[in-house]
Amino acid sequence: MPESRPRQKTISDIRWFHQIDLGNGVITPGESPNAKMVKNMRFPADLTGKTFLDIGAWDGFYSFEAEKRGAKRVLATDSFIWQNKSWASKDGFDFAKRALNSKVEEMTIDSLDISPETVGLWDVVFYSGVLYHMKHPMLSLERAASVAKELLILQSMTDMGWHMRPAIAFYPGSELRGDPTNWCGPNLRCIKAMLKLCGFTRIELVNRKSIAWKVYHALKWRQISEIQRNRVVVHAYR
Image (tube, rainbow, N blue to C red; front, top):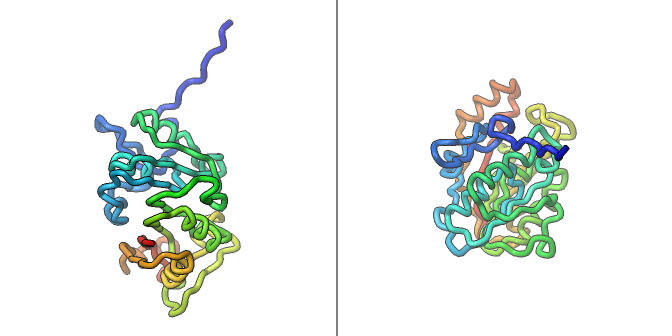
């Protein structure tokens, strides 16, 4: 008897994180409102002729978005999600890439292994939702910065917002919202200082959450420490 091929997964078979517009009115049922986040992140409207590296791509929304906005080459990278070390997998990325007939390149690589030797140099590097998951945040940021020729877009959870000096909160367990993959919470001053040490000459804060957002999360998680936490987007230029 001929071997039967495995059934190709459908949208409903996949646990999505990103909301990706696949066309014809089909949007993947992810948890992250990416269309809104693109505006908040001030994601470049025109990437014509640019190269774009996505570190921690997950389902690939930002990789595919860069392609739509004209990037001549896009590389999506991930390790933790794509190697099934969490509740998600690479299935979402693979499905969306097929559905969009995308030419986005892909590489399974840990963020700490990013370097000019492993991935090359890129005009724009997108580093979102990665930093606070790192046991070695400075090292991870140095790796991302080492391949950014023009612009690094960084989005991260922050903590210790009331401290007047650069500081990082460390979570050895699951102190941050019950998630053991959350390791650190640098404050904004620390992020800016780290980026300067990485050689960026202009650092611009483009978005951070409101006081109402912080109060909401303090009530939701029943932790007064949430008042010091935020989520920021920073653009760092060479």
